[in-house]
Image (cartoon, rainbow, N blue to C red; front, side):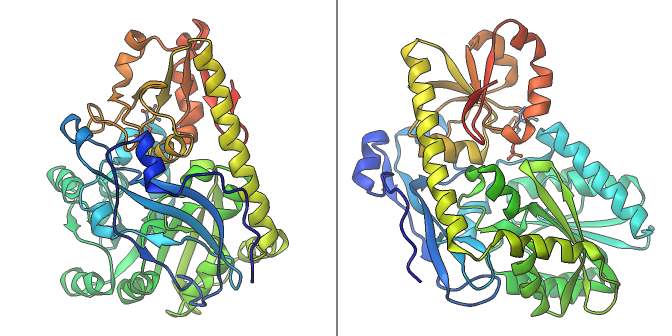
Length: 437
Ligand code: TMP
């Protein structure tokens, strides 16, 4: 199938990127030839962001003048199953060995994970003898709630620095990628799991077959695997395109996921929507035939079918809108810069780095980004080289405008800045169209 290419005035040439960032060099990547969910080769390009640095590749001051690796960021959809995935992937070790994201840095996330753990303990009547495994357990924020509730816990996370933090806080964490191989080791050392949680991690895992073979191996015969991820259908409706980046290799919906699970004799028995991260779903999975399938599963499958998640038209319209949003953002900021307004970013997020680099904004236009994560502070954003500082610097910075680069926590951020807003600080929300709030 030939997809009509949407506007392509973005930049894919390294020498053009070097005008923006003289340190830019090409990094290594691999092309994806087969759909991760259904294994067909019917992948079609629909969106290009050009060359991008790693979304969480924050730099120290010393590294600002060293070569910075850039990678192509292109997005495909699969016309067989409707899976959306990146065209090129970077080695997982390059992305995850050292990590700066911390679940505990965003208090709405802490609250969200606390409620999730409580819900799972109640719904599946978990007790102390039951093991809960959290895949991509980060600093142990979710597991710490299970622990408080008296449940036996285990985490697994590939980031050495983050696993060390979790272990120091007495959240037992294996420093490894979750796979069929590591699952077999866990089975030997800990036995089966009554619950396996995979929260905001599915998009980061390139090999779904190894992932689901691992879940199949470890899941208790009456156990539940809970996967939560930003929902493709919401991303398509809200145009929040900056969640597509090198760590998020898949933008997932129920249909392709159910195909991949069935290959491993696993099935979805329930689906629930949650507003977090611009719209996510929680998918409840069991061994095939163990649980009654909830009617809600068909409701999601029907909606995906009605929207047409395998239909090229929806993706070509989406891409056109993405380029429009980028152009509007550039226009809005240019006009503010022309008026000599001071602009900062709020939240040094990976998605914010996609937006800033896509719009070719850097430290000249955006003087700083505030962020609550202690280990991001003192670093510089990848590509755009904007200093990251703590929120306590806000009054000293005294900006006129703050771009909500952590738009997913807009409510919490606006609430805590009520007084500053009264005094004249204005926030810019990028989606669905850049708007001054
Ligand atoms: P995330 O969108 O990838 O979850 O990251 C959210 C980022 O926003 C994280 O680095 C912490 C930061 N943040 C703040 O700086 N202040 C806040 O009030 C909140 C909620 C988040």
